[in-house]
Image (cartoon, rainbow over all chains, first blue to last red; front, side, top):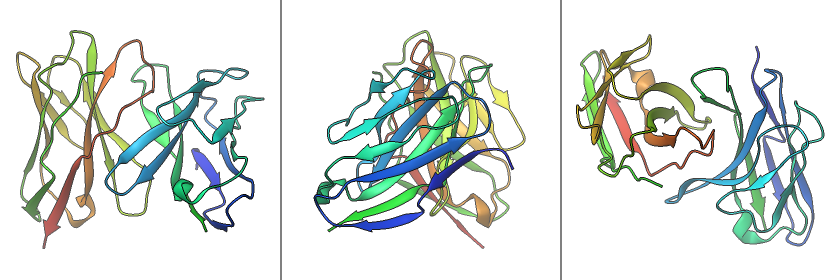
Length: 113
Length: 111
């Protein structure tokens, strides 16, 4: 089934360690996004990429970096994790051919201790 | 960015219609109205969107007020699988997918 694959599904990480959340899409969408979701705060945009080779900052970019070497992959890296980065992370891609709707992955639950 | 206001929660009975309201009094003329929903332990999924006219698709209908300051997502026959958080979002035409999610409405469906 076409869509977005995120990995890992769940991870526990010690504070100070680095971590890369992987996101791959097979829909050839140009734009991709990373959101985090926390109780009471809803979904907040971390970083985005309008096309391969470009990235931009969202609402809450601090402590995160992204890269977009090709159309399909959009990894999110935490260089030195802190407990406040405990969250559920969702990757999404956008179909810009008409409705401009987002397709989301199933999410990655990260716990930083 | 224009904001939306939705009730925190709503209840419905199975197989009855559900009307989920959204206020967006500061909407601009080029903002699209998008609805997404998020089932438990899943990522959000697209439901429907519109600009000025009412819209129908296989999942739902979207009724947009004439002044566009409010809209209503209509689920014609709620099922237990429709229990989710429903988000009403305004998307400026030139902002691509940088959607700003609010708190949404948590819909519970009783058998």
